[in-house]
Length: 596
Ligand SMILES: Cc1cc2nc3c(=O)[nH]c(=O)nc-3n(C[C@H](O)[C@H](O)[C@H](O)COP(=O)(O)O)c2cc1C
Image (cartoon, rainbow, N blue to C red; front, side, top):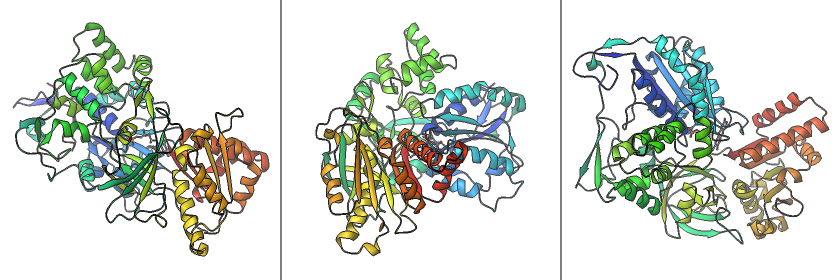
C-alpha cells in the first residue's frame, strides 16, 4: 500500500523525503511540488510545511538544528545576481555557507540539487551549483548529479523532465527499498476547505512565510499614473507610476516588489467556467500555517492569492487531463504532460503562453474544485521593478517605469494588465528591497549608464541624484561627482518617451553626454552600436563604472561587446577577455540589473 493510502494498519513506504525550495517568481516551488507528487507515487513520504499539500518546505522555514539530521533531502533553488539565492533562501544561504558549519555536519544526509537559472545571465545557476558543492563539503552524500533548468527559452520544465529521465527516480528506488511503516510515525495535516458564512478574516495569525510577507507589506497609493509614449499601442506602452506611502524611506535605484492582482474579467471567466459562486466564503482546515488569511471569499482568493494565469505546468496539465470528457482532449493533455511530449508541450503550450485559465476554457473543463485549485495553482508572487527616482530629489515619492508585456496574441502579462487597471488613488501592496545599483566607491569615478527602454529606470534615479546635488550647488556631497554619460535605446522617435527630460539633464550639465540608438529607423541601431570601444576602454582605466539595466539578452550583448573591446585594444586571448568581465563585476565596475 502506498503513501496516502494508509489505513490504521501498517503500510509500505520508502521513508521520508524533505523537499526544499527557494523561489522569487514561483518556478522552483512549482518543480518542488511536481517532484513531491512524483516521489509520493514512488511510496516516499514528502514531509513538508506547506499547508496545501504538506509536501514541500520553503527554505525560509528550514530548521537549523534539524536539517542536517534529515536523511534524504532535495533542493530546488534559483539564482539571482552574483551567485546569490532568492531572498526567501537568504537566511539559509548565509547559514549553510557560514564558517561555523562543521566539515561533517551533513554526514547523515543524502541529497540532490536542482538549480534554476537563465543562461542569459553571467552566473548561470550559480547558487544551485555552489549549494551542491557545499553540501558535499559538509559531508553530505550526493545521490544524483546536479540538474539545471534554463528559463531563457522557457525550457525549465522540459530541462527538469530531461534530468528526471536520466535516472533520478530509479536511483531513489534502488537506494531506498520499501519497508513496512507504522502510520503513527507520520503525522498528517488536514487538507480540506469548509464553506462558511463567517466574515472574512484578514487578520488571521499563523500564516506561512509568503502569506506573512504579503500581510506585512506596505500599502502604496498611486499619486500619478500616465502613459509616456507618444503613440502607445497594445504591448508597446510604458507607464510612469508615482507611488506614495506613509513613513516609507527608500534608497535611490533600489527595488520595489509589487503584488499583482488578477483582473475581474479573468476571475469572472474562471468562475463561469468552473461554476463557482465568487461570493461564497471558505476556510482552510489545517493543523499547519495558512497560505492566506481566511475565511475568504472565492473572489478575494482568486484576486489576490491564486496565480492562475502563469504558464501552465505539466502537473496542472496532468490534473486537468483527469477532468476532461472528450477522449482526444484527454490524450492531448496527457501527451503535453508527458516526457515524450516535450516538443508538443513547447509548441502548443509554452510558445502560446497557455495558462490554467486558457486551457480550462479551451478544453471546456467545468469540474475543478477549489481544493484542486489550491493544490495545483501557485500562490501569487510579487514582481520586481527598479525604482526610477532618487530619494534626495523625491523623498516621499517612488517612481516606476513599467513597460507593457504581451504574452501571446493580445493577451497581456499579469502585471501589465494589473497596472493598466490602476488609476490615481488606487492602492497597491508591495515592499522595498536592495538592488545591485550601489553608488561608486570613489565618488569622483566617471559613470556610464546603459539603459534602453524601461531599463532607463535606475539610470533616471542616478541622474536625478546627481542633478539634485548640482542644483543645490553641492556636487562635492554627491556620490556621483564624476562625469555621467547615458546610452539610451528605443525603436522610433515616437517611443523616445523621456526625450524632454533627458535633454534637459544634458543641457544643465547633469549628463555630460547623451546618446540615443533607434532600432526601427532607416539606419537600425541598438545600444551596442553606439558604444565607443576606445572611450569605454579609457573609462574603465580611469576606474569608471558601467551600469546596465534591461533584458538579460541585451546585457549579454553589451558584455560581449566589452570582451571584444579587450580583444581588440589589449589584444588578449578570448578566455582572458571573458575573465575580465567577472573581474569588473567583482570590483563593482560593472553593475547590472537584468530581467528575463
Ligand atoms: C533580476 C533577475 C536576476 C537573475 N539573475 C540570475 C543569475 O545571476 N543567474 C541565473 O542563472 N539566473 C538568474 N535569473 C534567472 C532566474 O534564476 C530564473 O528565472 C529562475 O527560473 C527563477 O526561478 P524562481 O521563480 O524559482 O525564482 C535572474 C532572474 C531575474 C528576474
